[in-house]
Length: 502
Ligand code: NDP
Ligand code: BG6
Image (cartoon, rainbow, N blue to C red):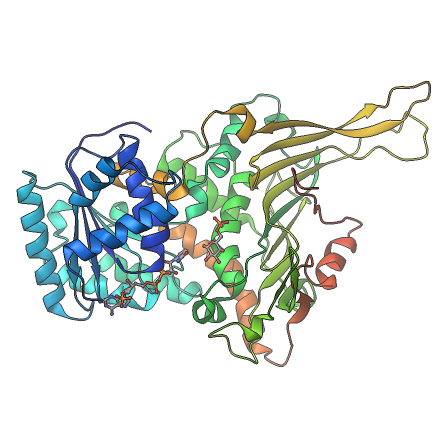
């Protein structure tokens, strides 16, 4: 990361919330610690709870100590960071809130000797509040059209709840902000290992020639969590895993694996290519919707030796809920590169292990030369996004001895042993990019729209068939058996191994 010294003010709406405490402020502190924040930087938080600047600083100091990857921070550095941190209390629906905010910004920026800094509004708030804040920002003159070059807005997910609402929200955003000012965040794109997908593909001459239907048999993308809904039952019960993980994080992974090399590595060209992947996704037919999409929900079970409750017993979840906590399905990209290659996607909460991975399964060699009891395993390239970030390549090797026996062995690269520093948190990279005006790692309007078009038919099918129950699976398993059958029906199996785990 390079240092740009343009003065910047970050305004976080939702400054008393979970995301601010666990991710945003710790990330800003880490940027400060590593010398990436501009020397004239200010942070202003806005939320409903009454707090003084001093109380807010106390809370944010604790947040940094508890959640930043630095562990216990250097006191002097933390104090310096907190001294540039301010708070405005008010309801988002109240016009006065924006007058107070404007006054505060004038005070803070003039005290720092700053005129017209980069200003980042970060909406870390419930989606129902997005339109309210957007309208008030415009009405209060906090986003003048003639200052579009220095004023930006970061919008958290979920960006709408289906294709139509996503479009309505985009229209609302554009009443106040031009597209170039809008940064729709998907924190997966800030992960080092996710950025490495394109680097690995395109900076190594040996893989790109193989990256197509001629050599690849199929691709599996898995986002498996052992966590449940972690106190976000109210939100999750409305959303389900299809909206929470698949529409954004997983489709982004699919785009990065499936896209053509962009003509330049810049925001427009990268996003143009990603959109083409989403456009190439074969729409689900009625038969697929009815039979080839597995929707599951966990019941109680054991995870790492501890008993965990059923989804329907989680706080703020409807005891009769049909919400999906697991989903698995198969898609095809109808384009030249990928014609006929199945991509299997699955995401689930309370599964047997935590792993986010992309498993590229190669075709077998054209001829079996070595007569032996067991056919050699096909090559597998595993892009392990988390945990134990790295890349594994499975090849066949002769077992030492007089007979020809072929064993699968692994060539591996692990971030933890190769690089002497751990990867930065995704939010560090994304906040810095937004401050610098680089939107490459943020979703463009049409990208979000096409992603919603992929999942909306599934959502509509479930809504139209409320009598069809979700398939239950025990917490601590790899999901419902129907999920296994989905891929087994094609003569394949899910790759459930997690590197580094016994
Ligand atoms: P929280 O419920 O923890 O925080 C919401 C914040 O918004 C609080 O500061 C709250 O203030 C404020 N707020 C809500 N309504 C008003 C209002 N009318 N006036 C003033 N302030 C208001 O939510 P999260 O932090 O968990 O999530 C924020 C956003 O980030 C959501 O869009 C979520 O989907 C997204 N997100 C969150 C993740 C997470 O891990 N938490 C992960 C990915 C995305 P107060 O409490 O003082 O009333
Ligand atoms: C968030 C989802 O976007 O991503 C959560 O709302 C999920 O439900 C989280 O747990 C997973 O992120 P990560 O970085 O832990 O894989």
